Image (cartoon, rainbow, N blue to C red; front, side, top):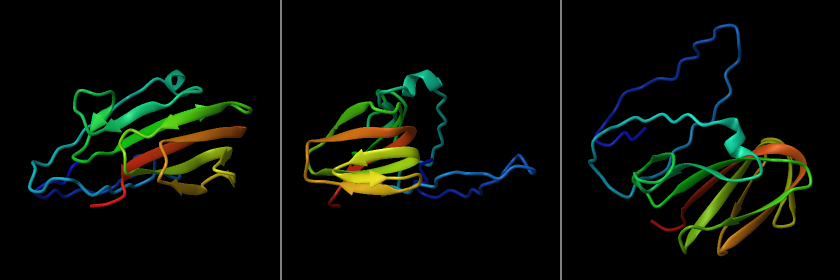
Length: 144
């Protein structure tokens, strides 16, 4: 969702008998006074397996949806024992990595479920799965 010049919304759990689990992520835009918009993307779970699936970028022509910022969001389902290398898309960006579930090793740090780490001043990041799980990577500019 891009709030742009203003938008009103609320989060509603349509399943009253189940607990909702979500991440509400705010990324500062690089433009002001744009038209509000909303987009929703579906993907196949197989697209996550041992690779990065881009779900958000700065380019409307790229895979996933887009936002007004030099930012990229990726999901991955990494199997135990596998290692992936994430290449930072833009010099000067940092990457916030959220462990949705599983156990991962990143920059000599172990991340358990719901742990996160920020990595910057690098061109790439190695991610090793100690236990099968899912990650969300959020690459954003480190300066405004």
